[in-house]
Image 1 (cartoon, helix red, strand yellow):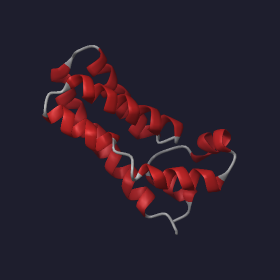
Image 2 (cartoon, one colour):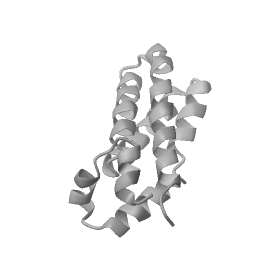
Image 3 (cartoon, one colour):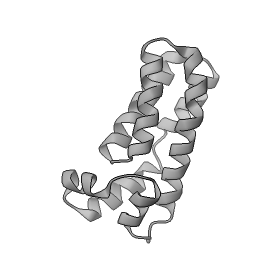
Image 4 (tube, one colour):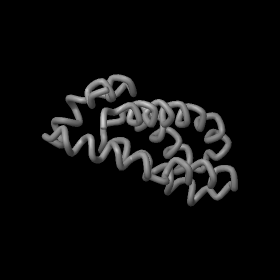
Length: 116
């Protein structure tokens, strides 16, 4: 799959991110590096441990990375959980995590299908 199809598969807007990066090669490079980003795993583990300050940092990082890379569905889901954590609405995070997981999994699957 090419990078445009990858962004379509994750429900993101390729043209929007291309407008910032101006280089398909850079988009592909940074999308590939996203697979090594520990923010999602950290979010899950820190929420499970009820370490809410660290969960906030992980969610905020995931939100920023996904926004910068134009991963719109993941950005939207991580934004909601970030704001719940910021407002100390910890019980709400449990209900929001499945949407983050779904968007994250969809994003990762799409990136993994990129042509080498």
